[in-house]
Every structure is written in structure tokens, then in C-alpha cells.
Length: 289
Figure 1 (cartoon, rainbow, N blue to C red):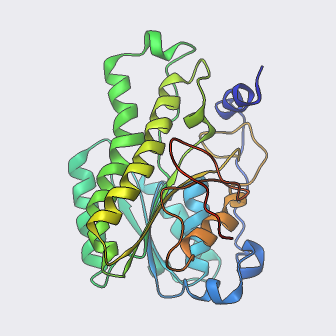
Figure 2 (spheres, rainbow, N blue to C red):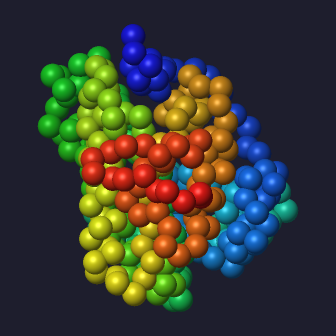
């Protein structure tokens, strides 16, 4: 079995329990110099899928740095758990705003974009698309899945980040910087049997990242555009309960990308360890993050 096949089979292996949340976030714990860490204070970010896993870790870290975070998902209870975790750490709950939405519903997405836009009259500083559906169609999804199931996977894993990103680009441009991070997966480079639909959605998300990066750079010539994708690797989340890795492992790279100054990477692909990942005609980012 190849390494990629092993990873993807582990990705959906059931297990029990999720890692405890680490609230000791700091410049030191994320490997960011103090000036860049401090630059997050007073900024606003939107994290889809912010109630669990990587999205929750990112939201908690940004809030700890002094940012205001919008966390969205369809389960209000999970979003509230993110707020409650912040409150238990001593931060005011007001820095984390839950925005309930069903990513399969374009009307819900439009309403959520309106809520966030109105809450950020001076602009949104970044969007992190973390929410995604895992593969749950059995061992041969490309042969046996229904059209309805195909549509639901595409709606959440591909159409939703497209709709949110294009709706919020103009709001982010108000800050002079458009920052979008799409959470991809090794699946986007794979063809492993059993998770074929998930593979396709992540490969398509990769192309969306690269294409949107170029298009937004043309539309918003006065803004600094940084649209990139991150492969988080394995970590124990609701989608991947077979891993022992903490989702906080993605934070050093994410914070580096969210604090990178002007003329940063755009249309690039990174593994959580900082390695450039080759996809399509994307070229490596030659500067140090």
C-alpha cells in the first residue's frame, strides 16, 4: 500500500475521543516573531468549520492573539463550545461570534456573508475555509454513490468555499489585503479507492485556489492578494479520529501565512511543515515564510 493510500485510509478510520484543546497560544508556541504575532491584535477573521478540529484550533489561536473571530457551521452547539473554551481561558466571549449556516444552502451562505460584512465595516482581514464533508458512501463511492450524495459533497467541499470567497473578497479588499486560506488534503493529489468523491472535491478545491488567486489579483489591482491552500496532514478531528496528532500542529504555518506582509505567496500550496507542494502550474514561493 502506498503512503498516500495509507494516509487516506487512516483519514476515515474510526476511533474514540478527541484531543484536548490547548489554550497556551503565544508567539513562542506558534514560532512567530513577536511583531507578527502582535499584528493580529484588533483584526477580524472568518473561519468556516470553526466549531471543531483545525477550524476551532485556528479560531482559538487567533482570538488568543487579540483578533475577533467569526466561526461558522451548521451545528450551533459546536460553535458555542468554541466560545465557551475562550471564556474558560479568560477571554471575553464577545471576541468569538458564532454564525450558524448550512454550507450546502446558498441562501444560508449569502445570509452569513451579510452578517459578517455588516459586522466588519472597515473590512475583514482574512477568510479560512476549513469546513468539509468526509467520505461516507462506502468502499466504492464512484460506482455506488447517488447523484444526491455527489451533489452534497460538491456543494460543501467546493461550491461553498467558492461562494464565501467571492462574496467576501470585496470586504477584505477594504483592508488593502485579501487573505484566503483553503484547507486542502493529501486527497487532492491522490486517487485512493474508497474516498474517490472526497479526492475529487479536494483536487477541485486546489484548482479553485490557484484560479481564484489569479482572478482576484486581476480584479483588485490595488490590493495585495494572498490566496493559498494548506494541506494539514493528519490530526485527530471529527473527520479523522484515527490520528494521535493534535490539530494545533497546523498553527505555525497558518499564523505565518495570515501575518505575511505584502507581496506574499499567492496561488501556492503548502504542507503544514512549510514545504511547498506542486500542483498544476503553481511555482514555489522562493521567500521564507
